[in-house]
Amino acid sequence: MTDSTRAPEREDALTYDEAVRGTENEIKRQLRSTPVVISRLTSHLSRAEGKSIRAKSLLICAMGRDGLIAGGAVKTAAAVELLHLATLVHDDIIDDADKRRGIKTLHRKFGEKGAVLCGDYLVCMALELASSTKPPEERRKLAPRTLPGYLTDVLTGEMRQNRNNRNYALTERQYLKIITGKTAAMFEACFHLGFLFSDESEACMSDYLTIGKNAGIIFQLADDCADYESTARSSKKPVLSDYKTGVVTLPLIYALKSDGSLRDRILGGMTPRELKKAVAAAGGLSYTHLKIAGYHKKTLALISALPGLKNKKEKLTALLDRAAGMPAVR
Image (tube, rainbow, N blue to C red; front, side):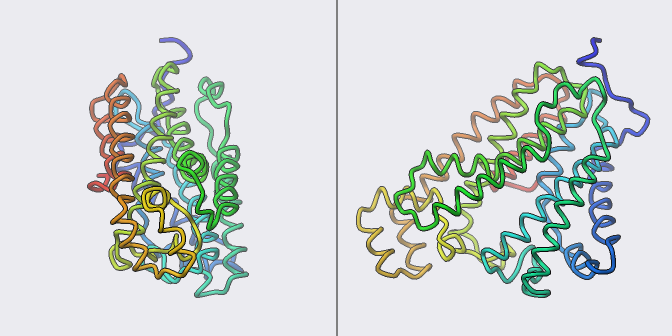
């Protein structure tokens, strides 16, 4: 076995289920062990239950050929979830959301200033936690990008989205560029970081990065549809919030292209309920589901072609299904 494929030290190796539980415990430990000045806010956040799809993707990619996961991947997965949580805190302020993950949003309960500062604190906490754990030394040459680098892509994507608020001339290509940053970059980071903890051949790395990026795009497109299709009760967050805050997503982009009168009706003052019906009638949701299916199919082919454990590929497939809005990741 060459240096590039040598397995990491396995003394601290965990099963997948152990790693998931360890990640959940680490997140709660971090949130509940903050200084008194911010502990009320972080304790509130610790009561929310998220899907942890990013952390799980990292842990799956970290599985070695023995089916086990190096313990260091747990802290890295927890760091990614804390970083994601920070972005949600800030997003909720921007969207003026009332609930997230079934609980009152931080800015609603503690005020905007406290929520902003807490979000900033979570970013620092996440980066400090990530820096405390390194992949095996022989794998570090495969890490030309770091977590802060991926975070830069996320923030750039968010800025592009903000700049295009209520831009009803936004194209599909421009929108894909936005979500490749704001959502897909963090998924790609998880696949990259997980891969570094594994003993997979470095020849597979580009495939893992592509699968991660595609999973992020699928996840965002499914979320775009859910904003029109879900209820607040089922999603545990506001629905039709994109339209209310001026965010233009793919279902609306396609509907505007298909229905030449829709833009004038929006500018004339459509209610969210009216827009929901118009987007569905113009084929915006059907088209976006077709795009999801296309990305899903080609990404499944990449997963199937990967060498390694059948169980690992099954978990990656289940995760991809979950990103697309199918049954939950086990």
